[in-house]
Image (cartoon, rainbow, N blue to C red):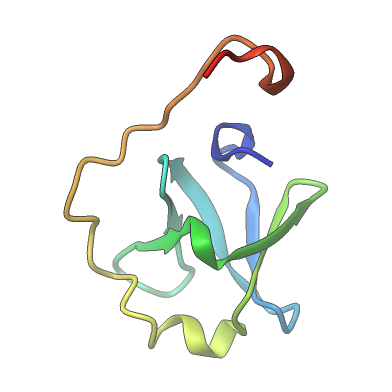
Length: 93
């Protein structure tokens, strides 16, 4: 799945099935995620996404480890989502 296919409002869960939060924004390399009970958001890197199904993003780490991953820091570079009106099969590289 492409990052452009992810949408705000989708749920994010750890690999233990526990809820992590909700997608606020989607970038090219990160998903800005609001966490219930926390005053700040986290930036979940695309590399931590293990699977996506039925509007739920499954991470490769358990929910309890998310707070210790250092994801509270915003990305150093601008993370603009690269979108294309063409389907993946029709994009020219």
